[in-house]
Length: 119
Image (spheres, one colour):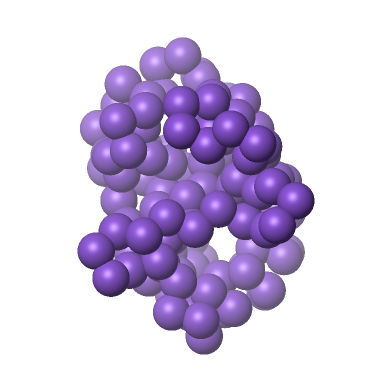
């Protein structure tokens, strides 16, 4: 499955979410942002959110606007399913799926994303 980095951010939040889920279901890697201290967690209200994208380029492009010093971190599917999402569930960290350049995207519990990917 090929995702067009240029048009992806112009899609609706739901379309970006659906494309992300299809990408990961088909074996595609996902990316988050990290620096020397760890992964980027954004606070939305009282919620801690880890943003993820389907390509390294998208993650790096998003980091340029407000998160200098952060760069894309590759998360392979096995680690995402078996370590990251269960760990995020235990830690109460939500997932922000493919936020666009304005920061808009679907935020949900890690267990819900895992269910959608495995469903």
